[in-house]
Image (cartoon, rainbow over all chains, first blue to last red; front, side, top):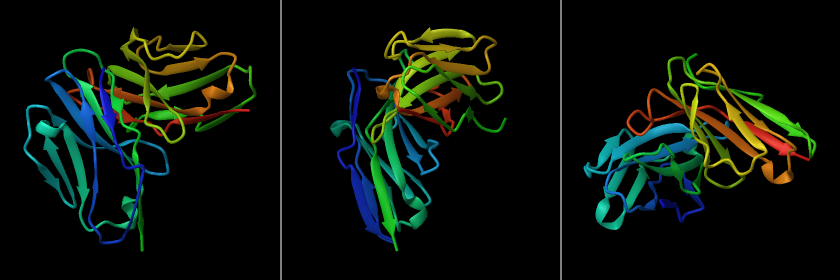
Length: 115
Length: 115
């Protein structure tokens, strides 16, 4: 069975600080996808990134960057120069590509960005 | 439509009452998923449809939960004889195909409160 762990329940930062959200996953499969979703107070899950298990290249998108390390089974998410609008719950998730269509989510990290 | 639409947005049910939650996926999306999100937790898989076929219902917590998608578009999640532990946000997601390659689009969810 798959498992995703987000050990940080809640993080508070002041605007313009950098913040890293941790994600550690467990799976015996070698082919899978990892995701990050943002859940603002309105409730919908907003897709941020999908990463294939074969692609360990780090990715940057504006103020967002992701560090995927298979050796430590981690897929961490960094927000640079955080803004109040970044305040939300962030979920890391995993899905196997070899069959099945279930996303396995972590318990989420509540990020609060204050002025 | 442009996104996944769920209704009602909020539902309060008395214990023992039956409820029906509706999901309108993105037009043309073959796959449809239901997830249950308890307070402070990540979403958990309930069931999966490909067109009108329910291919996986392993996540449904009891036989009080029933989902259908008779014409391969709109889906309804029905909960019979609701219990307090059914209180949660019910999220619907749709995908062009299986999901792992194309990603999911989530709706804003239905918040069910059983009193």
